[in-house]
Every structure is written in structure tokens, then in C-alpha cells.
Amino acid sequence: MQPETHLRILDFPDALALVLDHAGKLTARPAPERLALLATQGRTLAEAVAADRPQPPFDRSTRDGFATQAASVQQGAAAQVIGQVRAGEIWQGAALLPGQAVEVMTGAPIPAGADCVVMLEHVLDEEPSGLRRVHLAEGRSIHAGENVVPCGSEARAGEVLLPTGTRMGAAEIAIAAACGRATLQVFARPRIAVIATGDELVEVEDSPLPHQIRNSNSYALATQIAAAGAEAIRQPVAQDTCEALLASIRAARACDLLLLTGGVSMGKYDLVEAVLLELGAEFFFTGVRMQPGKPVVFGRLPGTADRPPQYFFGLPGNPVSTQVTFLLFAAPLLRALCGERQQQPRFVQATLAEPLRTKTGLTRFLPALLHYDLHTPTVRQVPWQGSGDQAANARANGYLVVPPDRETLAAGEPVTVLLQ
Ligand code: AMP
Ligand code: MG
Image 1: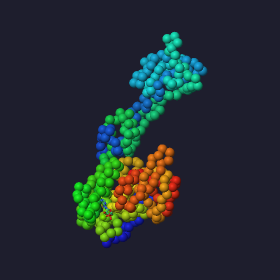
Image 2: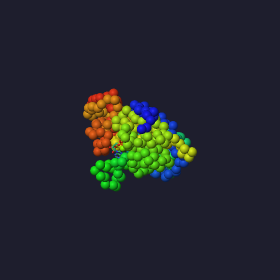
Image 3: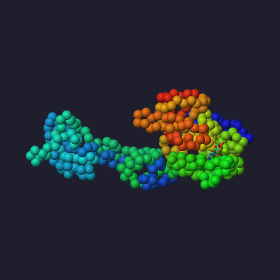
Image 4: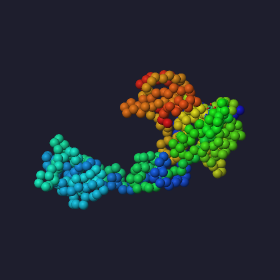
């Protein structure tokens, strides 16, 4: 039997704070790689992206209309239209004088001398004597600066728009494109070892005997790891023997993080902790007052001459527990290894659609369906049979968080939801 001095059971908020504290001190892998812009999607910047020129690069019209001086069309005055500028052109004439206007299109640079753009829809456009003139329509007004975005007002040249550690999505890739960055340096993807443990497990390609279970956790974790921006190294299933576990954990030593599933409960063949202990592990927690996920283990294996210390999580084998504890604990550490600055799990608030009852004592993460309504996002629990219920889990899109002191929640209450 393992010595029990390493045992440490925490309340959920303390466990999360502890993981985030470790994550905050981690650095990304060295040796960033340079990728083509589109290939950076989901990756984390290893360099800053700065504006290569002012944004916008000229005083830009936000409307189709007439660039002029606001004063030229006040009090019923009309301005004479002396030309036009399309997007992609530049006004070749002299700076506009009072009383002059130039027709401009959305996105065009406004001519020097103009201080506003009067919207096409707001003017009367006349050609009484061959001279084209515009004046404001009844009830319309204009002031200097209207419908013009001044040069450099969105970003100054040299201003950092994406700091190191930014995760690349559509908006980030777009601004990098706007700054002329066809390639970018991103942090190398951390390699995350996934070891499913259990004598009952067979692989997805195999036909299970009636008492056997298909290994689905490795697939859940590989998907969650990829979504977090890292690379999953799925190892073969490890049997519930010390020798098999030792060999499997040793084979994963080159990875940046070790995720084990199963074998962390109190059973006779739950040997993961004992084997880690034998390898000299330091345990930060060996259980959390939460459900699902109570037996979750977090710790670190000592470094060697040629390897840095290696963090590990022993995630409970029940599939919902595995996925919830990944989201709450493993994902933040993994994002830190990716070099990302935003590490914490994603919680949102929603209105509870139906009352619910549970037991006190543990923080609950109940599979739930969140409706992303425009006005009031609502959430309801998905009926489930407990932490092994993968079917219910697949009908959910988040987890309703119930604090440990709450036995009942009323419909209409604001509640916290963990997003997947
Ligand atoms: P354990 O944490 O090893 O006690 O396992 C708890 C439950 O989760 C048992 O019913 C296991 O059969 C199941 N389980 C463990 N590992 C996996 C896995 N990789 N895929 C699917 N189910 C699993
Ligand atoms: Mg097991």
C-alpha cells in the first residue's frame, strides 16, 4: 500500500487557483517556428505584430458621398462638385477650397482641404446650369470630422497590435494581414502524452467482449488537446499493473505534459498514484471536492540531467470526469505551455431555465445545454446517469456549476456555466 503522506484533498476553487499559479510560471517551449499566415490559426504568437504604417493609412471616407468643408454646406449653402475619388484612387487636384466638394466612395482617401463627408443620402444633387452642386437635404446636418476616419486613428505606425502570447483567430490573422505579415513566428506546439489505463479497455478498432470497454478517453483528450493548440501523443492502453504503468510513463518522459486517465480512485488496482510516487513524484493535490472528477491528481515528476521536471495529471477514468477535469485543470496548464497569456477555463453566466436539486458538499459540474439567446442566454441540466454517461455528455454543450453549499437552484436564477 502506498504511504498516505502525499494525500491532499482540496476545495475546487483552491485546486483551480493552484493550477493557475503553476500555469502562470510556465514558459512555452523554446525554438518557435515560422508559419504561413493562415497556418497560424489556433497557434500562439512568439513575436509581436506591430502596425507597419498608420491605420488607416490616409483620412478614409466611411461613406459614399461628398467630401467637403462642413461650413461649405451650412445654412442652405451649396458646394460645387469638382471631381470624384474612388477607393484605390487619390485626389490629384489641389486642396479643396471653401465651397468645393469632391464625390467620394466608401474607403476612398478624402482630398486635402475637406473636413467631412456628407452622405449621398443626405444631399440634393443638382445640375441647374451644367454645374453640379450639392446641398444638404431638409432636416440634415453635418459637422467637421463626420464620416471620416483620420489617418492613424486606429493605430499609429509601430504600435503593437498583437503582443507575444496572442492566440491566433480570424481577427488576429486579419490584422496581421493588414500589417503585411505573410509569415509569423509561433511557439512550437507542446507535446502532450495521453495514457489510458485499465485492464477492461480495448481500442476502437477492436471488438470488445461483453465485459470490455472501448477506450474513448484517449480520443476525447486528443480532441481537447488539439483544440487547445497542442499535439496529442496517444500511447497504447496501459494495463493495471505497476510494470505496465511504469513502462508507459517512462515512454512518455520526452513529452511536455503527461495525462493519464483511470486508475486514480481508491480501488485495489488503481495504481497510478503509487507508480508516480515510486518515480519520485511531488503531488500538489490528490483529490478535489468536486463531482464529476473527485479523484483527480496533479503533480510533477522530478527532472533528470537531460530532462526538465514533467507535470502530470491523473484524470479519473469516467469519461465525463476525464473531460471536465481536462477543461478545468489540464487545459490551463496546456495553454501556458503553448505560450498563451489567457489560461483560465471559460466560465459564463446564464439564467437557469428549470429548477434543479443536488447534494451539498461538492462543487458540481453538471452536463448542461446552453441556449445562446440574443437577450437572455438560458441553461438547463441534461438528464444523466452520472459521470460515466457519455451519451448525456454528448447532448450537452457545457457544464452547470453548482457551488458546494447549494442543494436547490430555482428557475430564473443566474448561474455559472463552464464552456467546453
Ligand atoms: P477508473 O478511474 O479506472 O476507476 O475508471 C472509472 C470508470 O471509467 C470505469 O467504468 C472504466 O471502465 C471507465 N474508463 C476508464 N478508462 C476509460 C477509457 N479510457 N475510456 C472509456 N472509459 C474508461
Ligand atoms: Mg481503471
